[in-house]
Length: 502
Image (cartoon, rainbow, N blue to C red; front, side, top):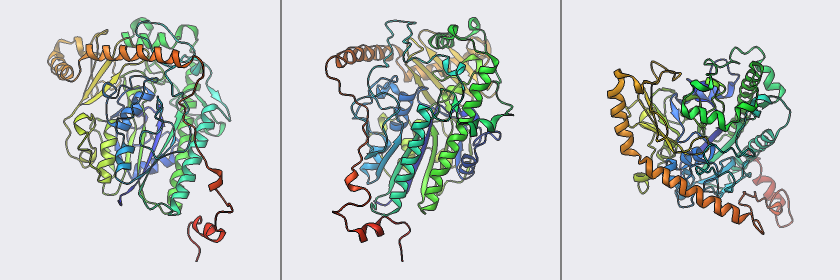
């Protein structure tokens, strides 16, 4: 098969409101701005679920957590669920992952032929929530506000070490691809863990934001007793009572977060430069798994349907797609069918069970009627939550909470819940009817609880006696690298050089 090469640049926890049309002007992100100038920019793109593992499984498969079973950060991503890596590989592509995808379970490839790094997070069931114990905090893996109070500068951290390697491995792979040893088209996914908290940045990037005017959230903290029910649960899950969140801590956290966007911009620029230097053409996709509230309303991290958490940047640069801004709401679940569409790969056999649709019609200015669907069924709630974004409206439903309806055109910061407004009952009724035709919330809840209970049993059993981890172990055969005596030196030197010698 001959098809376009594809480079996916994925980041973690990047707030989509900072990308209204490419990166906001005040962000120091020249490489992403250059990419935006040649891309279709989707201003209202949403995650399938505002948490790492479920959001990424939905991104890769085009399916919601209620289909994949990846409800939280410790739920297995089943091997029988096709991903974009499967679809492309089946059609003849070389598929490779450098970096994070937060796969849980013994399958750590999910269609990737090659994986260059291990993951940054565990692959087992140890982070399983337990709805049988409402309000219980599991301190050793739950977020707490220490990421905010501990924000600042460092030259190396666990996450920097990881992302430095992700970029290096991706660049090395692209250099190798340029040598032409494998004639297949390729799809490389380079997936970083920044700007995910903890909010710690290198000095060179921190200094870029010394005079930044955006170090305080536009919507300041709302008192706990005035928060909606789910936000109260998130406050409690984040152990807020045991931390003093000062104005300085907020500013340092946001400054480090912005600095890490610039850090990523450097890494992405380096990868794109290798692509250019080696004269390889590729479709380029830039996306995040979910956002970060960054102190808006007093909320941090993700796990919420508010736009800071659920909305993500999405940009696609591809031949035949005119650069421009698309404001129609779309989903990261649309990326899988879009990649297949761009590569000329059919998904007909699984499309009846796919929640995404190709973005190419929207990118070309055609209408789109389907609402965007989002689910959340992990820690910080005690029953599954669902969301519909349709046109200007956003509807949030949960069996435990009052309905929420927001008019994002009139109220982009989602400050006025219209579900109790007499003037908006018709809209509420129509959207709620549509949502409840899509979701059986009682069944969803029962499925999540059954999954959690099974995983607690399995995890505790596997921790007894001999333990074999599922974490991915990158394999590098040193006997096939550089120069070895089973190789012809003359052939080696020529084949490993790009461009070739005369």
